[in-house]
Image 1 (cartoon, rainbow, N blue to C red):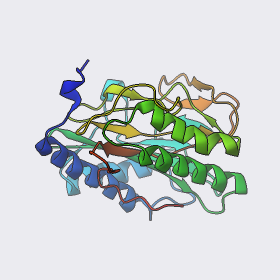
Image 2 (spheres, rainbow, N blue to C red):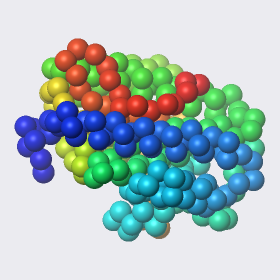
Image 3 (cartoon, rainbow, N blue to C red):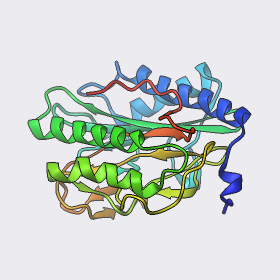
Image 4 (cartoon, rainbow, N blue to C red):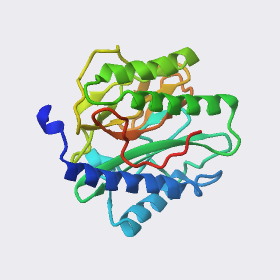
Length: 258
C-alpha cells in the first residue's frame, strides 16, 4: 500500500496521466457511432481493442487484469459494473449501457466511463443516466487541496438521494497513477469534513454507481459481473481527477453532458 506522501504525483507523472486520460476519452468518443441497436458487446470490445492497440499504440488495461478476459467493460441495464463483452449480448432498443475504458500509455493509466441510451430509452432510463452524471460532477466540484473524501461522498449523496435512487456501497473509486488501483478508496457516500484528506498532486477516480432500487449487488458465477440484487437499472459515469490547490481539474475526458 502506498503512503500518503507517495500518493502525490510529480508534474511529469501527471502529464503522462493527462495523455493516457485523453486516449481513454478518445476511445469513448470513437465508440459513439458504434453503440446502436443490434451490435454485440463483443463487437464493441473488438473495435475498442483494435483502436487502442493499433491506432493509439497503447495497452487496454483490463485485458488479463486479474483474469478479466476482455479489453473493456460493458454493463447493460441491471449490470452495475465489470460486465464482460460477449457475442451473444446484443444491444436492444431502450437498453442503457456503460462502457468503461482504461488505457495504459508510457506506464501510466487513464480511466473513464460513460453511459449510452440505446435507441428510445424510457423516462426512467433517461433519469437515472442523468442523475448518475450529475452526481459525478457534484463529487468533482468539491475536489481541491485540503478537502476530504467525505466531502466528495456527501456531495454525491446530496444529488442522488433526493431523486430516490441509491448509491452502491460495494464498489468505489480508487487511486490511480502508474498502478491501476491503489489508495485512497473513494466512497460515493459520506459525511462532510470526514475521511481521507486530499493533497495537491493526488490522482484518483470518482465513479458513482447509482441504482434505481436497492443499493445491494451480487456477483454472477463468472466472478466479475456485478448486478443489482433486485435487477433494476444501474448507471455510472467516471472521471479521473488530479487534486490542485483551489480548482477542480479532471484529466482530459471529452464526455458530453446528457
